[in-house]
Length: 378
Picture 1 (cartoon, rainbow, N blue to C red):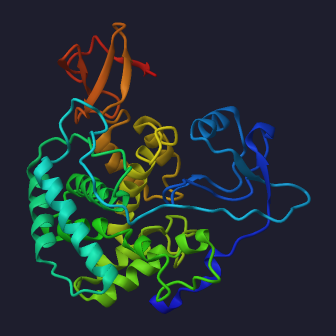
Picture 2: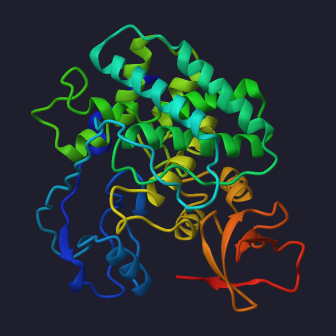
Picture 3: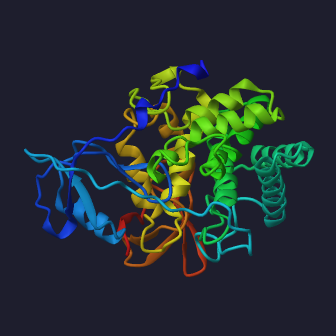
């Protein structure tokens, strides 16, 4: 199965890059446009540029786009620079200040410590003691299974230790989806393991054992991280569950069969991977190393919805919406009574009627039908 992977999937084509200020509405994107700090597609190849798209790209400080022209020119190579070896310095603020975190901070700290220790041992080739993280994963699963309602409020600002925090946040979100899908503990534990380690290959992009350093560009190396992660975990021999390894390998496959590295489609993609890729996208796009580059939770939900059936399994997307609603935790909303509220969580009744905080009081819009959301506030 793994030997089917070839290098053909990361070869690039020639396109013309234009500065964003020179673009006109109606021009066609020549290549998929990727988020700077993850492998999530912001815009798909063939997308027609419009005013809304230009506005979002400018807010994320994307200055150049690959555009289709009658005469193509040599493409400038896309470069991605991420330091995945940064240390954990401190615990950052949650996405929505003043709201409780999705899990207890002590559980989060323990998880971070265990994941960091295993990651560093993998990097230097030490024998892995998996017992600490197995205990922590079990503790996290048990905590998630007892929660009657989810507050999607994660540790943000990945200015330090991006890989570690992103792995934990992805695991938390994946478990929320898994619990909503009524998955048993037997399946939730390996789901969490796969989510934590899904991007472990990013730590080995400059390791000559896995990458041809002299011949691979930064972009090309980044696209190999799923295959590298599979090899690293399989050779370390501390994860025996093949479903976990397959989930790491397949978390950038796409529902329509255009993903990497095996171009699997629909239900042929590992089910854990179909959950993880949505959690991965949500955390990546709502938290970056720059405040100017991140999307709001509301924008990210719209982005994920627009790719259901193309990038993501529509069934899993639907259940993700049951967790976050159309107005995720921390979203500022303008209410029909003229006040501004902050969304706490989904009401569990409908996607458009969350529980909000107004003037330090909770208001469940599913119970008070006289007030509704008019718009998302700036």
